[in-house]
Image 1: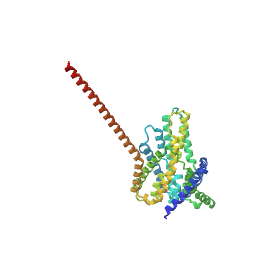
Image 2: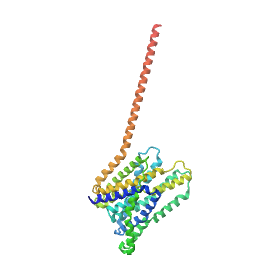
Image 3: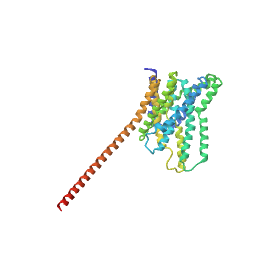
Length: 397
């Protein structure tokens, strides 16, 4: 049994244990586990990873690439991903435009990067996440406020500025971001992890060990997918994954000298689950609209919750699958083919449905045409009978 398959089985067993613990863990208890992951274990892991790399100006390309991906996916969400939603479902379309371009690599991607690619790749992924957070925390908030002001009943001049300020502060105060800044400062001063006192090194390394099992248990305990919109959401997530594969294949094609580890990083990082931050923005807008007594909300909050519930397990299984068959996913043509196949799968039901709809319309039109023709024929025969009767009466007289 190869290394990748062994690691995959280990991870799936821990996720399975999380599933078994679902009935014993309440939803509110999961928040505490999430805080431990995002505020303790993950920052320690990223800090260790950052202090192992060499600081270069070329590393700025990673946050730029992540931000570019976010912006491309935002355009795609408007013109490609949500086009099959029924006409008039504008709240759902805006919800998809907020969630589908966003990434949450902390829970869905980073633990697997550590296991399969190592600390060096995790450090690069953490740098890329800086660009992703700028998009998720600031740009998406500005987009949400733009939609709110276009549709709001009461205009509030101070809310936009104060909310944006609070979000920038949250960006600065988040433990992961503090760790990234601190790590970069230490690297700039030429310091490594071994430069720190032994008690600090041991503490950080002990916290680092917690991350992977905690995240996997959290994934297993948190999976509670509701029915109803499940089919639509899975279709959207498959479509998102397919487009992401296509974009990754373009980057791999443009940079053929990339190492296999970097190629896998370019493939799995964009496949991260949807972020919670856009949901926080939408919830804030929803609260403001309730105060404004807005009858038609800008976003569909229940739809957003269901997307988040489906996105984490979907991305987790997809990323594990990519790493398990890593040799298959490191060349551009294969990635592009997988992307097209996923897009085809997601669009196929709608194409077939539209064709079936067109056939039904044609059948109805043909039936109505035949009925009209038969009615005309009956009418013509009646007219002819009356004409013959009139002629006979005229001749008799």
